[in-house]
Amino acid sequence: MIYIGCHLSVTDGYEAMGRTMSRFGGNTFAWFTRNPRGGKTKPVIPEDVDALRAHLEKEGFGPLVAHGSYTMNLCSASEQTRRNGLDMLAQDLTRMELVPGNLYNFHPGAHAGQGTEAGIQEIADALNQVLTQDMKTTVLLETMAGKGSEIGGSFEELREIIDRVTFSEKLGVCFDTCHTWDAGYDVVHDLDGVLQHFDDVIGLARLKAVHFNDTKNDRDSHKDRHEKLGQGFLGMEAMKRIALHPALAGLPFILETPNDDEGYIEEIRTVQSWLP
Ligand code: FE
Ligand code: FE
Ligand code: ZN
Image (tube, rainbow, N blue to C red; front, side, top):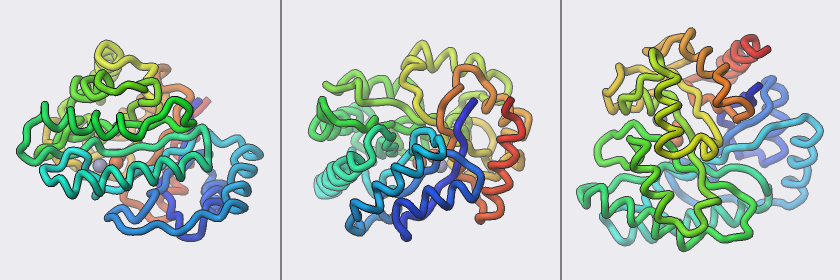
């Protein structure tokens, strides 16, 4: 069993997202904690959050997977950008505590010429400033395609970050199927091997969510362009094997495929048709 859902807009509030996902037929969802390109957030209305929590409980939703802004780069070469990123992260995590017990995923960052080692250290430093022992949110590092100077294109880099964080029990990983393939991991022909390698390097206990995307590009392309399920290089059979893999059982699967509402409803239905 897995949970399935897609990205939703927070524009109409928290409860609206829960109701929309139920209408879509899913039982988890993701949302950008702020405009994905950055910018301000709207104030949260406590009654709205309470209504969402009641809805999640009543409908048996799995963990939600919030997504940090794309502009947040904790290892930017610019100190100002790094500081802005840290502010965004701190605010986002404060807000996540209003919906305790859920997941917050972000892109580790791009070091922009400083080098992988410096980037990894800056990301860990930032996390060490915001993670606390009693927070109820698990923070996820997303597996990346390794585009440009992106950190997180290998499991080893994510492991390095985790190793340098004090409250590392608050950290997990979000496995993006498009990104891992684009980074070079063969999730089509050797899914068992890739997950075994993940287990060896990071540990499957850290795997807390899946971004369930097909990809427009061939393996090892380092491109990061998502495709609708079954219409890209992964293909429907591989997508199905991923959704049904015992190592991923019980996880929230988030669609980030290029779709409108109808497309998401259809993909959610497709995934559910595979589930026993
Ligand atoms: Fe992402
Ligand atoms: Fe993703
Ligand atoms: Zn992507």
